[in-house]
Length: 456
Image (cartoon, rainbow, N blue to C red; front, side, top):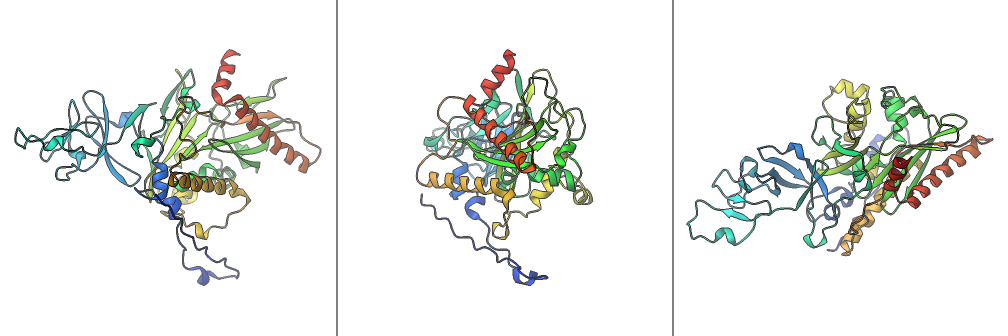
């Protein structure tokens, strides 16, 4: 499949006061990165990965209609417990299978009774003659699915290119169970393009403004207190790894202690993050590092070009309450629709910042700065992934090793004595962050770390 990336005409900068007249045309959108339907460059790229499409508890005795990457589908669990993901419209006369009946084996269309198995086989055509072979001549469109961690996952790419299911080490930590991370128990729907959410994954410095200075501190500690230190502008670093980009922001808490805010972006649409449980962190005598295991793994899944859904899993210690939803922070509450327009204006959160860019953000009008380095790295990496698919290659993070995939996210407190000057301390903080990630990569991710902690 040949892929040609069209040139985006940048909007000219306004170079005079009251000059809006000269920039009234929005400029072209970046279709190469934003369009996700079948046979689009980015859509084919995203289809090379398993995508979460529903929580298992959403599947009841009724079919579930779902739109994923521009395709209308139906999800169901039949009487055997098998999960099916079929094209929405019956292959007989096109009636939506969302109105079908779930049976012991498969789903039956309400219109003429055709029965489809989870793999697309047509099991019964009751209004056809008994000797009809119509049902044996073709299959109804179906996609392979797996269940893991209470989530239904789909692979919607070429059958001969199917990778391993996600084997992130964070999803396999002993002593933890995986729970839904969304407040309403289903995917968090946002009326904007998927990339606007992924842009946010690699933009740690928005936190001190949006989630602190503008709307008041929206992050809370596990005990319910405010993370006032969020208002501090930290030293940022963006580190490319074999699986994505680690975004760091180092903030000095006192003469000895540095808070490393560490949000990890994992190709193509995943974020892993958490927080230090004891806040503010107090390093004991002789203790130089306190690392918090990320508790949230979040997927930004396109519904179509102008809508997306967030599906998240929370690492919850066995027997303990969900650390994300038990006492939801304002940052989480303000990450979804449902508030009044005035509330959204007075205290915007991620939801408002993301949908406020429009259905599809127009990159031609952007003026990226130093704080957007992670965004630039991520977009380039996705372009590279799209290019790899076009050349018949696997993009980064298509995993077929049978092994766990290491991750490197999670906040840390470090003992770093304050340097003599502000400039020296700034560089010292940045180096401390780089050294920290080098160490995580050398140790092989979170499984060895978890094992070491368990042995203490």
